[in-house]
Image (tube, rainbow, N blue to C red; front, side, top):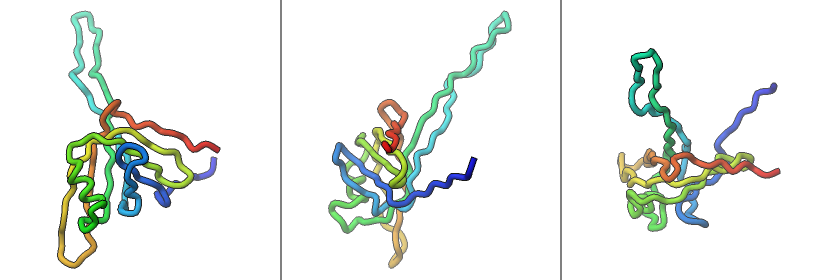
Amino acid sequence: MAIVQSKLKEGTLTLGTAPGVEFSCQATNVKLTPSADEVGDEVETLCGDKITAETTTSWVLAGTSIQDFDDPDGFVLYCFENDLVEVDFSWQPNALSGTWSGTVQIKAVEIGGDVNTRLTTDWEWKVTGSGTPTLTPVTP
């Protein structure tokens, strides 16, 4: 099997109810990250049988965006105005990839930084609803 390499480029990042607000041109880094969470402890009974801890997977949508707090329709003010609100998201990493979608809880992002420099802000939002993003594959 040959090596296949994917890159983030010419993708989309949309927040809010369709058609939503497009923030692809502000994002310099976007990722969906899973984490395995164990609930409870392993329990052993008198006969030697064991019940293992329950494992679930939770997801976050995270990234880095160029700050645009001068723009009333920009990413920074969108996050400020929608702090702790659950909104739909849609993320297509590149023009050839499928689209990941779901619901995230927006959190306000950092505003400002060093004087006279290009400012970026890191963000991370929990995937809510079912807790698992949905992949819609590219149709040939």
